[in-house]
Amino acid sequence: MKLKRQKQAKKTISFYKYNFSFREPFQVLIDGTFCQAALKNKIQIKEQIPKYLMGEVQLCTTNCALKELETLGKELYGAKVILQRFQIRSCSHFKSPVPASECLLSMLGETNPHHYFVATQDFGVTEEVKRLPGVPLIYIVVNTMVLEKPSASSQGRVAAVQAGELVTPAQQQSISSLKEQQGIGQEEGRGRKRKRKRSNPNPLSCLKKKKRKAPPTPAIQGEGDGKKGRSRSKKRKTGDGPSEPGGPAGSQ
Figure 1 (cartoon, rainbow, N blue to C red):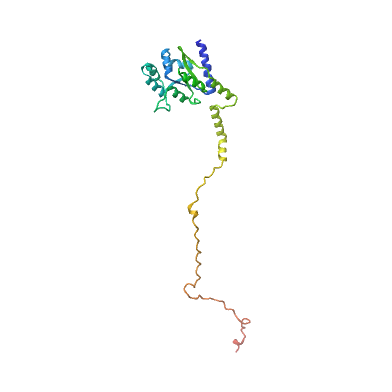
Figure 2: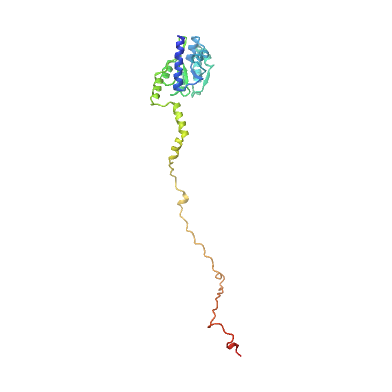
């Protein structure tokens, strides 16, 4: 029976590895109900979970889960001591803690981006986890830990991806990186013309233009001091031609 359970767990882990990109170290998100059941059934969580998942794990919880155990009193003191040994993941309820069930579901979101395994005995959390694709579920039956088979929502998501109806986050990331290498996204961004915002007109452009005065003409020489300037004219020589040396002026 133990060997069969181990084979089933190996098959389930492979399903989440290949279809939802789960990698070691596996992160196991634990609440107080799981610790209480482990304490009651004498299960060593730190020793048995790594063996069961056949790999390195990180056991973690939230501040809200610890606060809930503190408020419940001495009956759950042992579960609180166990839960305090695990890593605390930061949640969005640090200032105002909420019930552990609500906190765990908020850590998962809709797509379980941090790839958490959820270890809980809370029936309400279990039902909600089964509705989310890609969330492995661990619980305790009598004195045995059980890794739940992939839920119908997880199998439906995988079938839709294989049929080409959906794209996984890993595929979406590879597509975007290929677009960046080919420059497809950049070309689309360059081709789009940005619309200019309408702005108010410049107030200086609304002013009336001043008429420019014509530049003064340079004064003519001699007009400024009232004196007439000399006008030189070439004298033209009169007569028929030059006088001959034997003419009347030179006669004796």
